[in-house]
Length: 251
Length: 251
DNA sequence: CGGCAAATTGAGCATTGTCAATGTCTGTGG
DNA sequence: CCACAGACATTGACAATGCTCAATTTGCCG
Image 1: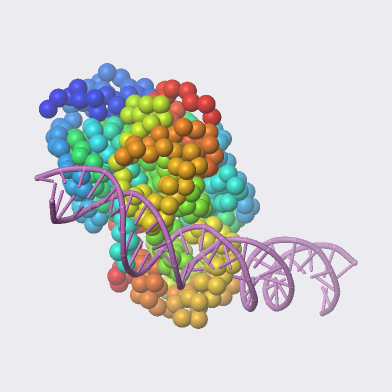
Image 2: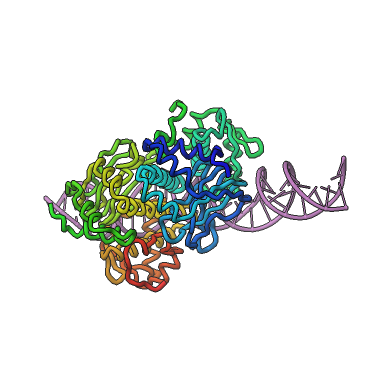
């Protein structure tokens, strides 16, 4: 395994922007017993109800969290990108309350539960950084509640596209407001509380209004201000100041 | 100020059920420089956009978190009960991404940001307990995404009522499936992504079906299993095993 | 006994869902 | 290189859940 995989670098940079880390913190973090695995799309990382025995860091690819209601409807509650330490819950909560799956082919570094617990017991600065990670996740969940609770279909989808644009940009995974969004329309529907049919209609509308341009699974945002307005998007909730000193983007 | 206020006890019990605490942890926690204040309903605890300088523990009363969209719609994203350490974000994130307000008259213990940070730097076991608190909050946010995203109005409200029933029960604030829910129908609407008018209709329907009984602001659940079914409620996401050894309730 | 916020109720409507068919793309095997 | 399968995207017609608007009643408090 190669500790210099760029995914580790993303994570380190993120953590450093929160609490200043000492050399010993960095060393401790990188000497965690990672096991790297490649997951195919739709592979399970954790399943709801399981007793998880590890957490994982996404090195490349995307993953998503979701829950299924009693009558079988699925709701995606979050999407993760490279550099994200997913499922830290796994090391601190006893039972997984939701399922995590690979969205695309993913490289993931798995860390045993106990190693994470030992790490945070011994390195409070690292613990704080990781805790902040989970707090930012929580902030994103809150915004998703708002998104599905109080925005109409058009705004929901615009908001989702804005969120990805900014997060991918900060992780250096997009360029010029253009990025790959490897979600099917059904997955977008499950992320926004809509039906695939309606997602299709709204995407077409956004295209014809010139708010987005689509080509395969790529999205380009020709007019950021306009899409931002359409989605009622304000990036405050991403706490980007605590993710990485980011390129300035006009508000 | 009286360190034996029952709110402190609730919090301590909760924390102990997560990581076994040593005497020094308990002492450190209780010797935080709390300042106790009584807040009237609707008083602000934090406002979105502020740089918070403190966190707070609810000693009595309820508080809620919410966000307002660009076009003025409000979405309540969570409700807190006595014993909850609200707004730990306040001590670890730089900017408040949402607003917290008192729902009822509340007694709150405020702790300066730096005291919290020093505490978690020095007492890893306490830090872990508090971290778990925020992870459980995050789990509840996820369930709320599911609630507003994938359940119909009836199920949303039933689910909300089930959640309160269980959380209040664990905090010893309800008896026999009967509790005070001091929310207006407008607030319920803002919690479920509905309109007050529709909330009213659904509540009436639930009453006439015998799933709930209402009397002032009190709710009684005559048939737990039935309401649970109506809301698709499964309490897994509350992680009650990590909140307090709880009274058994038949699934 | 006002005065007000909250709860109720009714009528009409629209956003979004449902159902079902068809088109398109991608990868695979022949 | 082409045909085919299967997943995904697209489209249309129609239905329905939940919204809007507006009026009325109820409950609470001084």
